[in-house]
Image 1 (cartoon, rainbow, N blue to C red):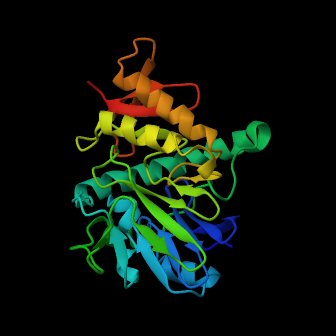
Image 2 (tube, rainbow, N blue to C red):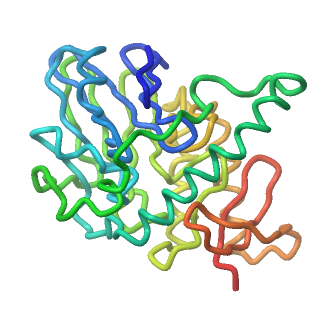
Length: 289
């Protein structure tokens, strides 16, 4: 199922990917009685009608963290839950920088689509960027946050959806409030920005590399409890459980100061210069200095 901006598809039993292709993924998971929407995306287009088109149950929102690309649709829902540690949601300057990045992605996609069609065959509806909606000037400076104040979530707290529970895992590193959700029934790990298959963002002032290493090690130790990893960014939104080990090993090498880790200059989605630490399975953005 697709709309002008979102792409939606089933990813597991009663789990749907709600993608804003090439930007951010939200995840809808349903039990017998209730559903949880894991993050609400950028907010450039209404997400609630898309969610309601695939799931008739009452829907609560859980934010994996409160960066602006994960909370944009919070105001469309009556109940939001998040970790209580305060984290910035992004100001107009950050949003304007990201809007520039959106346009850069669209411009680059023209040539990439042709190369992919001829040689690579990697693009899918999950990852092929959509044209930007109208009225994004209002999105850049939306005013004060709308919607309910988030109800606090604690590490180890269990959310009961009826025949399905989600366990909260506090996983700071990308931000102090970052959390993951583990589906105790089917083993789907909703990883937020703690794990991604593109570059993992650890370059911002609020990032904590040692906390990141501890959090990713904790996820890797979940072992057989995880059957699928569901992530927030880039074209490969799902990964096998082994990927958690790969990411944990990468962060372990970084905190140990492994001199063999290759680095190269890069730019993040705000256009800022960063240092990209490159590993076989993933990469990590670090401060440029």
